[in-house]
Image (cartoon, rainbow, N blue to C red):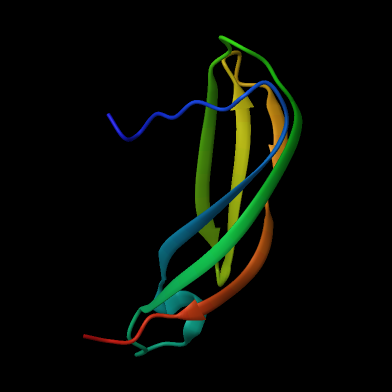
Length: 90
């Protein structure tokens, strides 16, 4: 199952890509939704063996976000945006 992955214990930087849609409410009335393609980076220095983590991502307006939680739903780290672009219409 490719939804799960393993990380070695210790300090790690997770780099990810997140694609999401910006709705017309954030662009302007009568506008077509805009597809965004963003890179994010998340640093966490206390990964432990056998622990379970949950990575959650979303978009707020034009900005992406991602957060890392432990199995108790405690927020451990927030990702930083590394750049975004618009996806061309197909």
